[in-house]
Amino acid sequence: MLTRRAFHLGLTSAAFAGFALQGCREELSAATLGAKGYGKLIGDEGGLLDLPKGFSYRIISQLGDAMADGHSVPDKADGMGAFDMGGGIVALVRNHEIRVTDLEKQPWIGGGKGPDLAYDRTTAGIALPGGTTTMMFNMKTGRVENQYRSLAGTIRNCAGGTTPWNSWLTCEEDVTRGGATVGQDHGWIFEVPAGHKGLVTPLALKDMGRFNHEAAAVDPRTGIVYLTEDEKDGLFYRFLPNTKSELAKGGRLQALVLKGTPIGSDTRNWNSVTLERGKPKQALWIDADGVDNLGNDMRLRLASKGAALFARGEGIHFGQDELYFTCTSGGVAQAGQVMRYRPSEFEGQPGEKDAPGTVEVFFESAGKHQSDYADNLTIAPNGHLIICEDQGGDGPVDNHLRGIAPNGAIYPIARLRTQTELAGVCFSPDGSTLFVNVYQPTKTLAITGPWGKVRVG
Image (cartoon, rainbow, N blue to C red; front, side):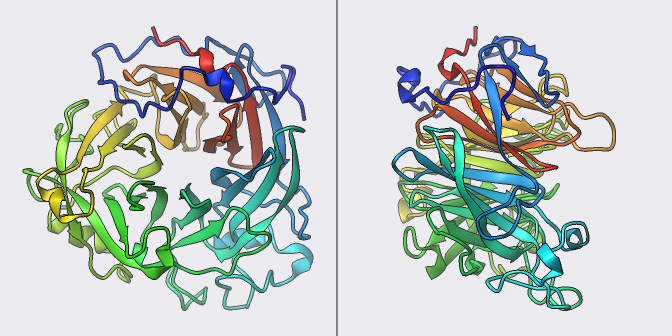
């Protein structure tokens, strides 16, 4: 499907000459509004996605499309990662945030019990519908050459994160216990190699904790994995693997503490401002115990020991020696925050105590007019953040893609015209194409345009 704006995939990374990934290192100024970005949004004749002049989108995959394995594209497309497979092929591994009850609306084809390689099943023996699909997208032709289920039998695969070793960490945002309706406990992270054809053999990475996982990001220098938790009183975690790049070999889960602040420090800024924009605080880390979290109280136990509270941690992305993550309902206006964490030079090592990492509020929305409920995010090749809004609710929804410049200036990139959210935002490895999901009904879009011509001043 082609929009009225000419669609092409001819841009290359040369379009970003002089825009090497900066990691947003410039400090915030008082003027955090007024960025021109790419200019005003132009109404889409197709009624789906408004974009600035010179930009276009194409629907490359959508709910119900037939896949190579005999299944059809599932609904509720959420987090997604892009991987360079060589020869102009990009693998897109896409989450589907499907609950057990969604089987009633979208049963397995032919009323069957689903694939054999499923992590879990209902007590009636039917494979759980959550998991991931993988697409092989040809950048030269602009077409999906292959797509198939790559993980099955999980619940509410919300977000996740890419790894430096070309795999996707897919996270369950659900802590259903095995017994009454399903066979096994849920709330885990699973790993899906980007190049794997067909379903992977599912392995829950249990040392990474059982909780309402949202997203994950890996520091390529250390192999440490950072994790967000979608709870109004959630925590920020890191996982120290026993062996770098081999997460199945286990490791230690830890939670962040703000150094020199009271027990249960509250970064949400709802009642009083604890964490200010541009004013980093030093971070300490404490070990988690009982990471299987059978009573779903691990975050409460850790908070009683000093772990800092975050307001619904969502998307997370690693830049140049630092990472960013969103807190959907954080901030004085409860309209969302973006946090920045800069790891220690000795992250996860004994010398970390003398030179700890730091955490700060990089951006806090002053209200719905600025940004409303930041969710998934990525870092563009020019160093700007791109966030997806997820306002939710039963009333009219006006969700956007928004950019945030290194100086904190925020600007619109796209406006969704349907009553759902955008999710899974990620760039192609060459930086020419932004991929994003329309959550429900599933649509995966490829957006091209003059990405290097953003104006901040």
